[in-house]
Length: 530
Ligand code: TEU
Ligand code: CA
Image (cartoon, rainbow, N blue to C red; front, side, top):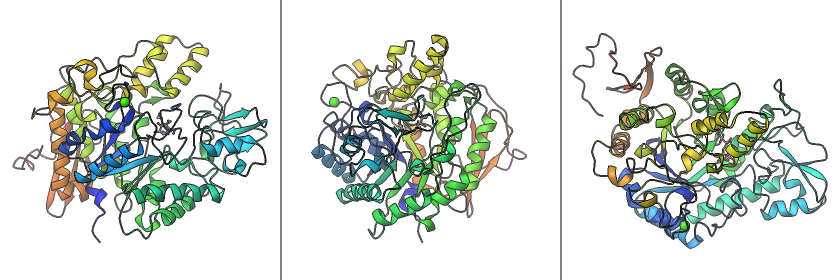
């Protein structure tokens, strides 16, 4: 059987709010994306993934969905979506949409009904209890909020405006499957599924472990790999995708997913999802106190982590490969060197390292230019609910504001969300109005116009890596062997398919390094690909 198309594909993620603004209101939109498709086709990516553009109060910038089957006027109309989809297909690319199936907005009609009375038919579509358990939400607050109207608590693993759906109820599942079929009927090529490993909760909702000195418990064991997760994913696969005679790309976002679990989720024989986003490597520089407690980066631990996932999915299943998305700081600032001297080389080094692993690479808007973190100096520059809630809680706990800002500068989600840098005109060419979030001041030196015709640019390097994946089967299917696991500056590995062997050697430091594989001679006559 031949490989599914997505094994040799590269996916490009668009966070619509910050990609391109067509009407000068300072907010990116669907026509803005449509106007930039030639840039993306030229980059060579196969698939576009659109983060949520659905009607939403924007409490979590669209991951709080109030209507799954419409377009928020902020981003355009359904006609704009249809035109965009057609233009993507015309250029030979595919388009997948982001679906948030774990929770809705509290303004979704389902929740409006559910909260209206204890005996409403949709009451049981969400999790209601007279007594909350001790779980903490991902956004630094209790995971339960009391609702005045009926004097009960509802569960929200994220913000209080993102109530969790109750997947135990078959009506909920059927409503979501019908919605997914509707998008497939429209012609989309698959889905990115938000926190999909959280849809099954232990229905007893037991308290979680409370770390010393804290008041709230961590409920992770009770919802990250719940008792019915495989059953739900397989049911969804059967109800939504089976019998359509086409292959779709389904990538499940799964915080806390272990490789043994991912092997089950992505085993094609089981019919669940095609690949998962795992979080092991992006947690390597989190300290004991969590993501904003920044720990030093150690290349050896990155090798252990990515290497473990390469071998864990070598025989069965499939990897996704990513450095960046709308939740992560910019990689060249995080683990590279974003100084003027080394930014370009560093961005290329990190790209090479990632893209030549086995798996499907994802590029997040601006990563292909080497976009950097934003130099936040004031709390009022922070827009993201996760960062703001954490900052407010930390300050209330007595943490100095300077320390809080340092955490946000290093790991805050807003780093990824500043506007795309198209050229060196005002606001980096993102908008003719006032951008909703400030443009990174580095844009005159880092922008698409500047790089598009420069063969030495980061952009040109991404094009080369994408082309290589399309032309060299060993990049797609070759087996993976890590070399020099203890080296602190060089990341090296081989990929082998039949009689082709590729050696990848990347100096991830800002110093010259003398390093050799074997006796140093075996690769002397090899062809240099990149
Ligand atoms: O993110 C999942 C999630 O767990 C986030 O809290 C993420 O782990 C964190 O930002 C990284 O530190 C998804 C979406 O990608 C995110 O934008 C949403 O806020 C979240 O789900 C809720 O829908
Ligand atoms: Ca706009």
